[in-house]
Length: 140
Image 1 (cartoon, helix red, strand yellow):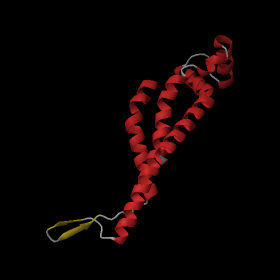
Image 2: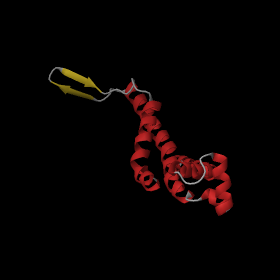
Image 3: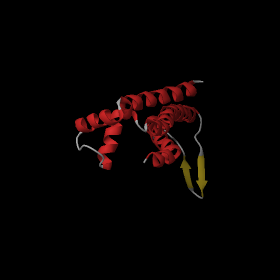
Image 4: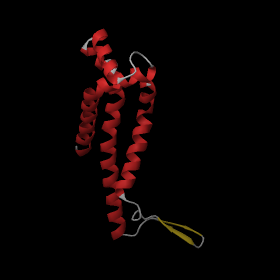
């Protein structure tokens, strides 16, 4: 249940952020593509004159399709991996950690030298990118 709450809170945070910042994203996209005015205030006025206030949120649905899953995945993945690594570290500090022996060489697989936060941060970035990259391509 905890992970579901983390995923939902991330999704809600992403949706709210994109909803609030959509006008700036619309203006930025128009300026990058070279449509209309070359400055922010000019683009803002042009959009309102041509499309009304709703024009500031044009194509926001595509942004939502991209950002909501990414923001949902990141905090849930981070917390889940951090908990798993911390539990493994605690277990292996009390018991013997996994080993591999090849001839006279013994490799101990301890996780004590890696921060659970670092591993969780890496995992959240990799997992979110793998899942959401097709949505990023669709948005572009």
